[in-house]
Length: 362
Image (cartoon, rainbow, N blue to C red; front, side, top):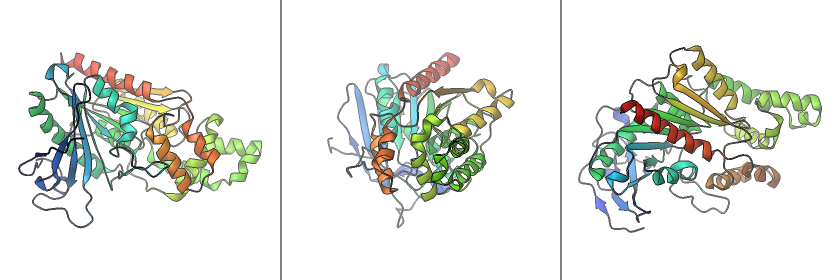
């Protein structure tokens, strides 16, 4: 990647967002790195930071890496800017061999990011280091979306027709919050393996499954009780050890349950073997359907036999590295690379959402 820099003169402060979460190019002096042209696209990478306006980075405040990709020629752009919100709490990701995985956004790049660029979307994502899926993370994601909106406008000689939010895991929890948020930054959302469908139920399920000893699955009765606790078919048992170890290592507080009164079209995707979120997702669907006005806005698509990682993406390597850190053996780690792929349905969902919104605005 070329290091010919583009210096931005002055901080790019965003009006209208929480004063604690103003986003700007790092110090107003950060160099953006124009990347090679990937086909007919431009790739820009750099850093943003969330600090109050007028201040430099305080001690311990991490710069957040971002990537923006868009077609190089305005006629090749379909008018949609997609913001990717990845899972977990951000930070540099490393695979089993310790190498750094891309920009820290590889969960979404492998799943849909590069495909979206090939289909004419503008795509941007950033590293939410230190934030999970609470209110602060949503406001920061909205601020980032507005910043990327302002970057797109001079580059492609017009404003985006719409901003779409694609969230994965905890990033999907952010997208779920955004779908009912009054800010209306986003015109539509795609949720993939998304948290926050029913946080209290999720906490109860995790407590129930951890209360059952591993030896409980040695008997038919114990196995059935365990399957009921995790909430997925027995076919998903090969993933149980990983999720049990992760739940025991990293207990999470229960966040407020998001509203099911959706404001924007929302496509939700989950694997039928994803015991981490599937019962939550189904509970959220039931709440949405109980609200007659919100029901038509929610499109749930379950992928048979899928977990949450496609076998050939970087997320598998990262999950295997986490499995090793949690003390799991090779059989449990190897299981993480199995299951039906999510990517085809995620890509269909984004294309369908774009077409729907484009038709409604025409």
